Length: 474
Image 1: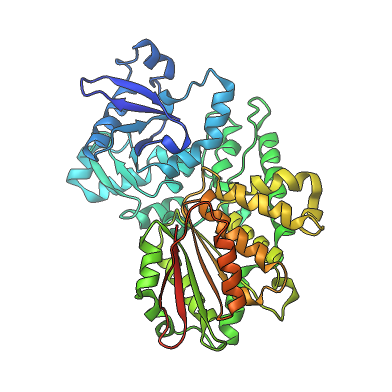
Image 2: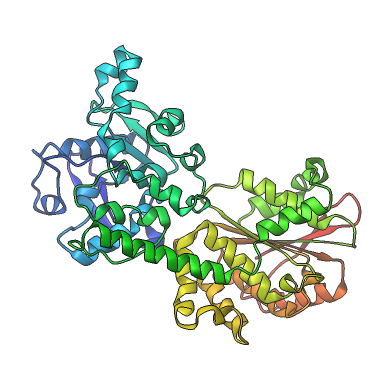
């Protein structure tokens, strides 16, 4: 990824970064006009007299005010003469906007005068802005966490949060999507509807601009026509849906709801206490503490406790952090084995970040549904799971498995896999629960001896009765 750096003397320089080395940066969203500064212009030191140069200067100065040294502008940070680079950039665009610290929307058709003198006039200009009619700006609105709007005089108008109601009315996009909900929560038909009122200069871009919205990748074929571009996009989405359907053994979200209903509902007061314990706080706040083990005798409420923890994490963790969980039940043959646990965890991870399905598809496209059902399934899924947790696009991840003691097949393998993730994925944290059985503790201790780094143990109370917990810092 190339980023611009403001040198302070009025010039800009390009720097190239790779994956984990990418620093914090601001990103510009705008509508293309007649005289934009290109990558070639920057390379040749030309373009300073083009109208588009002022947008770059605005982005640089605003980034500097926000204490950001680097910024990205699509017109000049991509070498569009290189077709391979252009394809990679378009397939990465949604992620680049999502990774940005700040996104600045520059509205060249909303003036400072309207903003300062007449609120009704400003809102009218804002609602009519060309920015809301363009195809590429759809992902630029939805992907970043922080989106700020500026008029053509570079004065701040508001943010995606403060202008949420107006943006919802202008675009018809649900407020939850504007607030950062995973787009996979919205069905295909609804997401396709968001592009209907928008236009692109090149007809194929109407389809290509949706790649990030559906979190799929495909080669670009300019000249194929809009109909063919949409056909290929729909085929990729269908492949994703078919793979996800075959991967699904049980939806852990439905299992959680069923368990809560069976037990008479979840009372907030029944789990709030655990959130205040030193063990939970250590697990939550200490980057070195990757595992919290909650154990206790039957009937102590471990499962409902984990349901409550899941609800709390959903409310409090950053939207970029993935949360996946699984509930083992010995009486249900579908969900009482290690392979089922792995399928459930992968299923929820892919639901929250669909691009992760690429790791599944590498094997699924050859084996089909048999990948999840034959004698080699555990081996294949373990490799897939490890690759997912090492994916550079994967952010912090919380994984929760309830009732290890009810995993009646291949529990030692599951425990080994949990421990191995501590060395291959330092951004992953686990919470597991089980009955207070010596055999579970023995297996866990045996597994911890295989970890690449020494593991210290911290044992403390995590229950008002007899449910001790164990935090294992790596």
